[in-house]
Length: 233
Image (cartoon, rainbow, N blue to C red; front, top):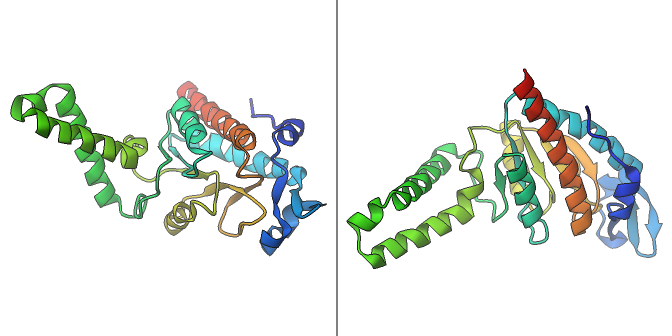
């Protein structure tokens, strides 16, 4: 059963509120409904259209067995992005996007391997047997540091089938790397951003926590549906 989008929910969550008209990107013109005072109002019928294309795509990606990488490094989006990704058992990036996360696989894989190895050795007591307390403490700090950078992609199996970005301006490097690899991007695009690089444009407010959470709920439901389909296959 496909995920149903409720335009009333989008309205109540403030997804339609764009940025100041002075900050808009002209290429967002097709997605703008009107102006209110000094700000743009995003056309929610366009948001629904965008979701109606993006959600079945995410479902198909998950159903094919490929992973969906969730990206949101902006402060107000971090927790929601992490919670959504973990709920549907998908990889995520919520701290700073490190250059090469997608395009420099060898280096990233090496760091993830190091993290997993340290965690395993810490868990089985190997580090405590071999090193003194101060050295073990340093290893523990290194594990925390590596987890901040790579924890969300520990279980990323190669190239993802899609990347979901909740702020395409803040995380333009993620969009750029996905584009280089030909990985489709589902992006929440506010009135101040260029929608051109995004394959699945979901026009909407990328600052309001309620709005971002609602859109993430839709994305998560679509992925969960795909995973369930894969399980039934």
